[in-house]
Length: 65
Image 1 (cartoon, one colour):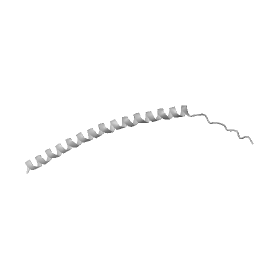
Image 2 (image 1 turned 180 degrees about the vertical axis):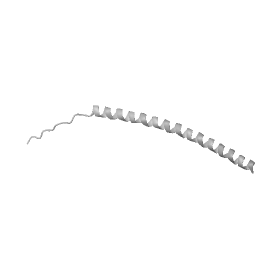
Image 3 (image 1 turned 135 degrees about the horizontal axis):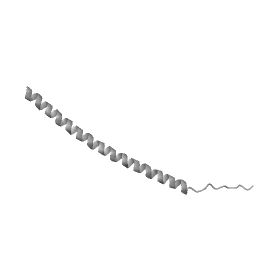
Image 4 (image 1 turned 180 degrees about the horizontal axis):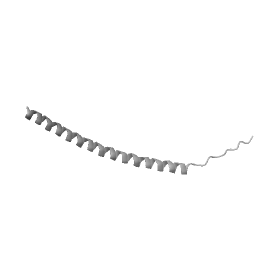
């Protein structure tokens, strides 16, 4: 009985280690995606600012009767 329980505990510990490894990999992936999103947001902001600067001034049209 003790050996069965010992084996069960070892299996659980192996599962926990595997899950911890998976969580660490996912965390690394999340951090990479977060960095990419921040970079894209900065690029979008830059393009938006450039579009605003290059926006033509409104033209006034005069109607002559």
